[in-house]
Length: 233
Image (cartoon, rainbow, N blue to C red):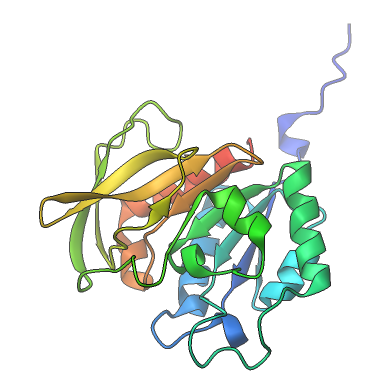
């Protein structure tokens, strides 16, 4: 009997798009183009076909054919960044909602927790956010992120990550999220990495302030695992 299965070598690579903060999605603190380049390198090293799109609205409106959306962008509502006002671009909102409905994988990186505020579907899908007036961070520096759930494909076998980063603290995390890793500040434990499976698979990694965070091999491995799990590779 002749096998009709497609040989592994002929399989098309999974496609990922990284929506990168520029324009109203940029800010003075995060070098989004540089960190998106590092994310792209990590995914390509793991076999992905990666597109980096520096127009967030265009990226959201053009998700057909992509298996994974990575958002590495800032808060469009922050003070001084509202020249275009609040309100979602209709094509971007429709594109994001459609992609989530069909099951696209999502990875939210660092400032993405305060991004896409015009898109309720994004907030629902990632299961948490940076809440102004509640969330904060200590000074950037060396930090240890502890894995507290080693039974998940994203975090299994990873006891901790040592990174140079900005540790987002007192983030709002929904009850439906599964926290995989935490960091500690003054004896208090704060969620750092979590996953959510409804309405689609999403991984939130609060790490990634600048390029130094991506110098940590454990962070690169975490991103690669997150992408595979979110996109069901």
